[in-house]
Image: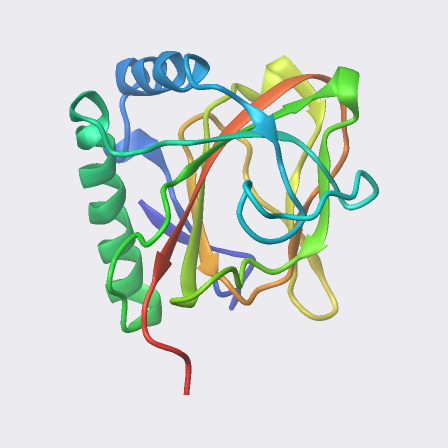
Length: 194
């Protein structure tokens, strides 16, 4: 099920309730990601060379590199991105130039990511996607929000929801006040905007 958020917003929602990911697939994905080595999330650049600023961002991340046991996820992610792009954006997309990232926000650390865009390295990121892994009853705060001009819109929090938006769109993750929130973020790249 695709839906806009709010009316006339460029943010698109794909709800897992109609087939993006089953609960078993989400459990499998979360277990796989929990086995990855986490590092501190940088504010800019790649983890190997990024800058750190706890005022702007506090999160732990791990790259989800292609491996036989996780290729089903890459294939599903590509399918969802194609559907959303064809329906709403028609960007010239070429694929995933970067591995998707597993992100963990902990209440004990005050996890958050202040207002930013996902412009990233070259080739340019065009379409960003967030997949919610954690049931919203397991944490407080940590909302994914978008600035749509005069309105701040909050994304749905249900487990398995996929939220897509143009990478140039300003967004943030508000501070988490308790519990732990896990999500996956992916970026689809393509030639530069004209």
